Image (cartoon, rainbow, N blue to C red; front, side, top):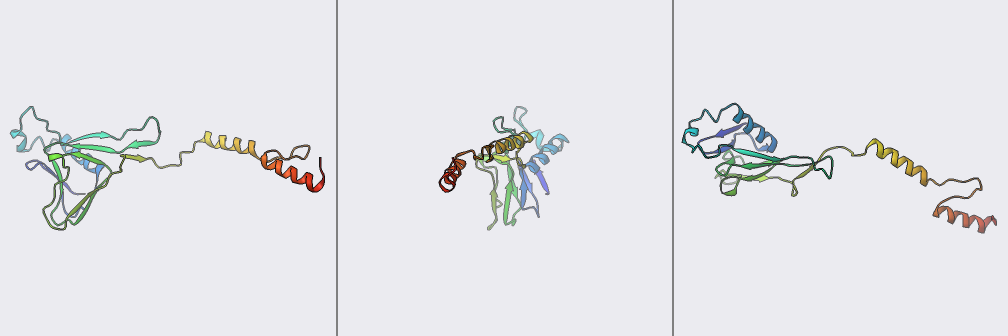
Length: 181
């Protein structure tokens, strides 16, 4: 996914032919650009107040829920209040998924392309939670299920009586039909 950081206009740009952007990929690209100092070498840094924050994204979230092991929060990316993201003009239907983006210039993380017919959809689960793939059944669960199943199995005892409420019904029918005591 071609991404460019425009430090002068303070935009994260998705260039042609990108029409899908995953939140984690956006985060990783911006973080890598920050680490290699690309932004620090750009002339825009000289124009900033030293007291101002120069971070583009602030990652939050993606932690395991202690009450629900295997359930992780979605990555939440707070965008610097001066920055926004933008797809290229003429991109048509575009999507950002896999993260919740908040913040941005005027509280808007996306900047419109200004071209008629361009639509950007930010897909985000309502509660910001994703579930780790897997059955969630542990080895102990299998043992417990097996033990419980064996306990509730309808057994014919030494006397020939069947245990359980269904067994009581069968025994009652046998008494009626076969005069068994």
